[in-house]
Length: 549
Image 1 (cartoon, rainbow, N blue to C red):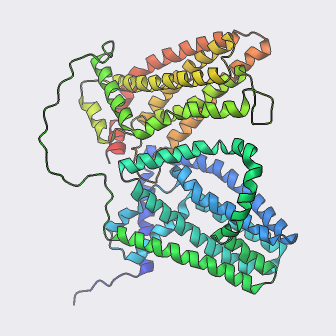
Image 2: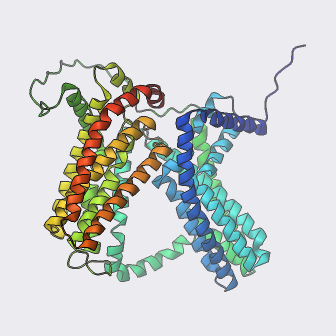
C-alpha cells in the first residue's frame, strides 16, 4: 500500500523555512561580493553595538534610580524612548533591516498561521528590534536590582510590549510598502518625509522663541498621552512598585487591548497578501489612442562638444533626473540647510548660545557638509539601470564614456547646488576672505574628483539594484563602508591642510596645496577611466546578475 503524505504541522513548516533560509544564506556567501557585503554590515553592526551597549547602562541606571527613589511613574519615559526608537528607526534607516522579502515564502505550501508567524518573526531581525530588546533587558535588570519582587511583572509587561512593537512595526512597514508601490504616491510620501526631517532642525529655534507660550498647551495634552501603550506599560510597573493591583490590571489590560487591535489589523493585512495581492505600478489597460509619430529633434542641445557616446549618456541621465520628483526635492535641501545653519550659528543674532561663527570658518564647513550629502549616490551609480545595464555591453561604446556621462551630470548638479549655497551664504554672512574662498573652491574640486574615481570603482565592484517602494536595503554594505571611509580620509586631509595654513600663518598656503591636490585628483581620474573600462568587462556577470534579477 502506497504511503500517504501527511500534512505538516505549524512547527514543522516554520522549522523547514528556517532551515531553507539558513542554507540560502550559507550558499550566498560563496560569492565574493556577498562576503564583502557581509563584512561591511559587520563593521556597521560593530558601531551600532557600541551605541546599544552604551545606552544599556543608561536604561539600567534609569530603571534603578526611578524605582529605588520612589519615582516609579517616570518609568513611562523609558518605555516611550524605546517605543519612539523602535518605530522611528526603520523609517530613517531601512537599510539595516532584513533584506529578504518574506512574501516569497508564498511559493511554498505554508498555512496562513505559519506565514503570519514567520512574517512577524522577521520584525525581530531589525536593528531597532534587537537594540530595543537589549534595552528592555537592561531595564528589567535595573528594576529587579532596585525591587526584586517586581521581576515577574517586569518580564510580563516587557514581553507584551515587545509583541505590541514588533506587530506595529511590521504593520506600518506593510502599509508603507503598499503606499510606495505607486510612483506618484511614493514621490509624494518621500518628499513630505524629507521636508519634515528638514523641518525638525527648526524646532530648536522655534522653541527658544515660543517655548514659554507652548508649555501650557503641552501640559494639557499629557492626560491624553497617558492612555497610549508606553504610558500604560510604565503605569503598570509603577502600580506594582506601589502595591496597587488595580492599577497594574488597568495598565496591563490596556496594553493587551492595543496588542489585540494591531494583531487583528496585521492578520487582515497578511491575509490579503496570502491570498495573492500583487503590488505593481502597471496601470490598468486603456483603450488605445492613435498617436502621431514624434517629431525628430534635429536641433542642438548644447552637447556638440562631447562625443556622441558621452552625449547620449548625458541625455539619458538628464531624463532620469527630470522624471524623478524626489531628486528635484533633494535639490532644495542645500539652500534650506544653509538657511538653517546660518540662522543658528552665524549672522547678527545666532540662536545657538555661542559666539557668532565667521564666514571664513563657516564657508568650508558648509561646503564639506553638502559634499557629504550629495556625493552618496555616486557610490552606486548603476542603481537605476536595472536590465538596461545590458545595453551598455551591447552598444558601441566603452565604459569610460558611460562614467564620463554619469559623472558630468553629477558634477553639473553639484556645481548648481554649490552656486546656490554660495549665494545663500553670501546673502546671510558674506563671502569669506579671498585666500579662504580660493582654497575652498580648490578643496571642492579635490574632494569631488577624488571621490568620483573611488565611487566609479565601487559602482562596478558592489552594485545593487534600487528597489522602488521596498522597505529594504538598497545599498551594498561594502559600498556604504567604502563611501564612509573615503569621506573620512578626504575630509581629514582637507582639515589638515586648512589647519596648516592657520598654524603657519600663511593665508595662501591652503589654496596652493589644494590646487596641487586638485590637479593630482583630476589626473588620477583621467588615468582611471581606461582601467575602469577593463574592470567593467571583468565585472560584467556581476553587474548583470545584481541589476537584472
